[in-house]
Amino acid sequence: MSAAASSAVIVRPGSRAVARVRKRQAADALSSRYEQAKAWSTPVSACCSASTVSRISVPVLVMNGEADQIVPYATSGPRAVKPVQNGTLKTYAGYPHSMPTTHADVINADLLAFIQS
Image (cartoon, one colour):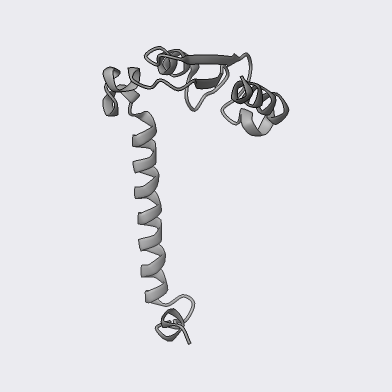
């Protein structure tokens, strides 16, 4: 028997222990979502200086949908590619944040073309 199985605790549904566990899980989930949102809203310039990013010498492809409501185009795509030496910005009119899923045929073809170039 594994250590995890031998240390399992069985509690009744609706017990205080279950309520405490669920409350802790909810708090953890909220905390991790906050940290994730905070990380995504931090500009690249806050974690990487322009001099650091400008030293990237390999080709970089930045793909950005103009209809992205999660990471708005105006504050992301053009700004992300600007400091990179060999950066390419590929803009997709009307494409949402989920464009790799909703428009996989176009995104995959463009990504493959970039890799092969």
